[in-house]
Image 1 (cartoon, one colour):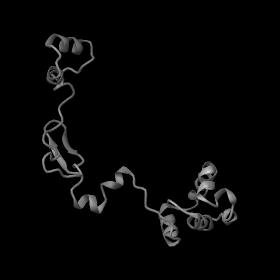
Image 2 (cartoon, one colour; image 1 turned 180 degrees about the vertical axis):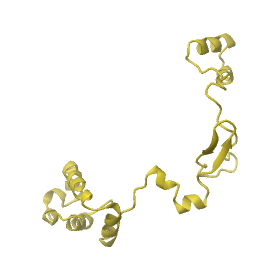
Image 3 (cartoon, rainbow, N blue to C red; image 1 turned 60 degrees about the vertical axis):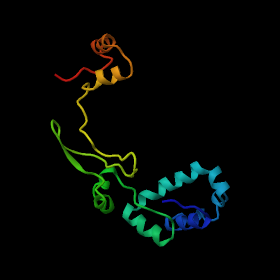
Image 4 (cartoon, rainbow, N blue to C red; image 1 turned 135 degrees about the vertical axis):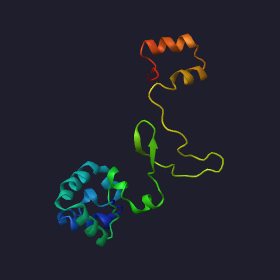
Amino acid sequence: MLPYNERHWAKFFDVGGREDLIGDERFSSQAARSANIDALYGIVAEVMPARTSKEWLTVLEAADIPVMPMNTPEDLFDDPHLNAVGMFPVVDHPTEGKLRHIKVPVSFSKTPGGYYRHPERLGKGTAEVLADVGFPDEGIGALQEHGAAGKPPE
């Protein structure tokens, strides 16, 4: 829910059962609401539990107050649009089984994103990466022996 202006807030106070706050100087303008934001959000926090999310969506839409459902991460897997665009493909990992990942949500002609290889086991690429940035072999071995860098799986 995101009331923007005096009309939205007056309607929210009305549908929220706080008609006593319509015209309250603390909330009568953007500047006044900003100066009293803690009190305002405290009132919102008191009012919102009175209805379910579904009920609030209906009431606030009817009152012409901007509102959208708040999704949980789990809700995203059931979103029709995200399913239609294949946002969460499942891949077969050779050691971990089926994994769901997030598709790159944009396309670039010269640097396309995507799932090109499976994630490595912890430590598998450590020596290679450290060597690529200039660590000598003995330094890499010392880091691994002291636990400061992952060891390849056995």
